[in-house]
Every structure is written in structure tokens, then in C-alpha cells.
Image (tube, rainbow, N blue to C red):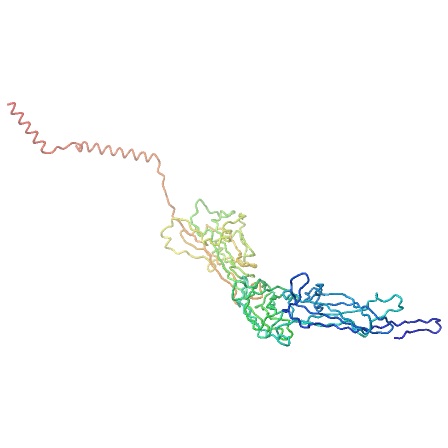
Length: 598
């Protein structure tokens, strides 16, 4: 460019713009060889016995220009594997510096004289990186070293603005893809779950049995990508089955999408065909629909056919709950008449009404799914013909249970004491092996009454109070209990002596919904009847014999014995009777005596 002088009319001044000399640089970047065989390890790293594959990077440059000196200095920069982002593993390093960047100077002594410099670059071990297909990009940037110019120069040279001051070349890693070094894989994927049904509340451990295969050429950086549904969590790789290959898998987040990525090989060689098992735990069903979906695909870094077919696995979700209603009467039997008890016309205390009768009901969710919005109804026999039967004093609940009655209870304002702890309720709830019926004590029942059948009093033939309860959410293994504390109105039954009765309360429940989007086709429901029997007993009478009666009886016995003995003696019962031969001997002796005397 020529220099430029600028003046203005009336200014009295002129401005001189001096043109800077333009330096045109002709640079070249040459790689030898351009395809690096990782198995051809001919270079030994300095200070070690490690052999590596290497290649040469040659930088050449010359220059020309006007009004410039014969020698210039260029500042050069070489960047190896420049397409790899910051933080990524650089596959090539400078042999002498073990770095991927290098700054150097190029001194050119004359115009149009080509000057070259060689740099030895080596390829890292294959275990240190995965990318074998993408090219190794090498950049060369240069600029004028202005510090080498003489200070006497009025203006300093500048590089040609219309010429790029950077060059790039690409080296490739030799792969087993034929003469064109271009791999075309044929990736295929199939998968099946070990179960196709998930039940809410169960452990729901699912294993996906996956079969990846490659019917084409090698697939580099081949990875299995599994998109995880929100309901599932990755738990690991199946390791106990020898028929399944153990893969290296990692959990990742990609744009708020949860993924499991498994390494299939680098490369996944041609003809590869194997099976593997990936385990998941499915537990989060709060917002789950009727099924969940796993999305699977193989991805590689190949340019052609880099992915496999997309596989979608659907697992159905169902909610199932087995609900049990059970109950007990405490005591199961009332025995009349009551010992040391007299009826009162207007009782004020609960003991004056009659014996205590408690019914306990438990709604137990066996599971596996949770239930909520359940209704529980109790029909309680309260009176018949304006006469009380079972007089309710208090209703106690345990668990997420809220109850109300169809009519007020304890209308007579009977005073009663509510125990702080109810051991029978605790035992019934927490001891699963407890019998639902308490063993009846041994009593002597009048024989004629055994033949009579007890009359059942329930809501079909007497007046009942309806107790309606709403039950909150019950998880698997949880229960809700209702305890009704009442007194048997003894006066009503004492007026009907020797009549047998069975007081029956009817309990029913119905589950309205479950706390999930998924609802079963049929919700649980059921009913039972709990009975309290009223029977009559024949008392066992025992007499206490006074001591004087016992002594008198002994004396009378002795007197009778003495009189009997005396009577027998008078009759000669105790005289000795001689045998006949003794009498004859006596007579013979008497005759002999008489003869002697004569």
C-alpha cells in the first residue's frame, strides 16, 4: 500500500499515514503417517521402557514482502487433538513434552526460503481413551514476533490480512474396518423383563434380560442406553448367572432424563452376540399410570449406522390388597344370675346396670398395596320393646379411624371410667396369634336349658345403633381398631329367667379407593358377626357340718356298739362250745372213779 497524506482546506496542516509493510507467509502442515496403527509401537518414551505408536508433525513456512528485512521470526503454536473439549482426554501428546500444546519460534533468514521443523507425536495407550473413530485434529497457528523487529523502523511489518494464519490437518487411528478404514456396523437389540406384572406394595425387583448383537463391522464406543422411568431405580448388574455377561454400567443424568449407560466394547466386534441382565427396583407408584416403560438402544460413534433399533419394554402395574375384618367379644358369655347384685330402677353408675361387655373390631390390611377411603359400619343391638339390651358407654378408636353414631349414646348420663390403657385391645391388635374368642370358664348349666336354642338378637329383630366410621390410609401390615364399651342391661334378662340369648353385632367394611392412579377392578369388602351369649347357671350348694354334730354322731355310734355287745353277751354269744368227744371222755373218767370207791 502507498503512504497517504491527508489535508484540509483552511486547516493549515497535513496528516501523513505511513503504510506498514505486508508480510505474506506461505505455511504448510504435514502429518506422516496420517493413519496411525496403534499396534505399531516403534517409539520408546524417554526415561521409560514403554513403547508407543508415534507419527511426525512437520511445520514448514516461507515469506515474501516489500520494504522488509531479509529475516523474520514467527511465533508458532501447535494444538494436538484440538476438537476434544477442555477436560476431555487428549489422545496424542508431544513425545518430548508429554503435553498437547506446544509454543515455538520459526526463524526464516531469507525471503522465499522454505524453513521446516519436525515434532514427534505419540498415541496414548488404548486403555486411556475410548474414541478411536473420530479424527485427531492438529492445529497450527502463527503470528509475527514483533519483538524481533529493529526499533529504528518507523512502522513495523504486518501479516497479510487476506491470508489465514492457521492450518489444520487430521490424523486417523487405524481400525479393523477394511481398506477404506470406514466401519459400517449392523447393531441389533432385543430385551425381555423377568416379569411383566408389577404389584404396588411388593418389592418389585425387575431384571431386564438384554441381548445386544452386531451383524456388521466393528461398532466403536458402543454403549447400551437405558432410559429409566420415574418409578424405577437402577440397582446393579446381574452377577450370579454365568449365562449372562457382566457389563460395566453407570447411572447418568442427561437433560433431566435418568439413564443407565453400559459399555458394550470398543469396538463391539463384528459377530458379537451375548446376553446380560440389568436390575431395577420399582417402588415409586404415587403418580404411576397402568404401566411403566423402559426405553433401550445401542449407540456408537460410527458415522454410518451408529445406532440399533429402539426397544420399548412395557410393564403393567396393578394394585392388590387383601383386607381382613375380625372381632372379639370380651367376655364371650354372660352367666346369670349375678352374684351379690341387685337391680336398681334408676342406675347412675355403670356397675349398677349389669356386667361389662366389650366388643373389639380390627380392620387389618394384609397388603401388599395400601388402601384408603374405607367405610366401616357396626350395627349394635341397643334395645328391644323399649328395654335396653347392650347399653353403650364409650367408643374408643385406634389408628386412622373417625366414627359417629346414628343416635346419641349414654343418654342416661351414666358415670363411667375410661381406662388409660386397654390391655385386651393391645393384645388383640399386636398379637397375631391371639384367639378371637376367650375361653369360657367351667360352670354348671342346668340340664334342661342345654336343650334349648338361644334366641339371636341382632339388627333384624331389635333396635340397633348404627356406628359409621371412615378409615384413613392403611399401608401394608397396618390396622385400625374400634372398641365399644358397654354394659349388659341385666334387669331386662332377669325378667326372662332361664331364657337363653345371643346378642349379635354386625360389622361390615368396604374399601372405596386406593391411593394410586391405578385402581383394581374389584375393591375389597366383607362382614362378620360378633356374639355375646347370655346363659343361666345352677349353683353348686355345699353344707358345712358343725363340730358338735360330728362329736354327737361319734358318741351315738359308740353307744350303739356297746348296747349291741351287751345283748350278744347276754345271749351267750361269747360262751365256748365244746366238741362231743370231750363229753364221752369225761363220762368214762367218772365211771372209773365210782368203781374204785366201791
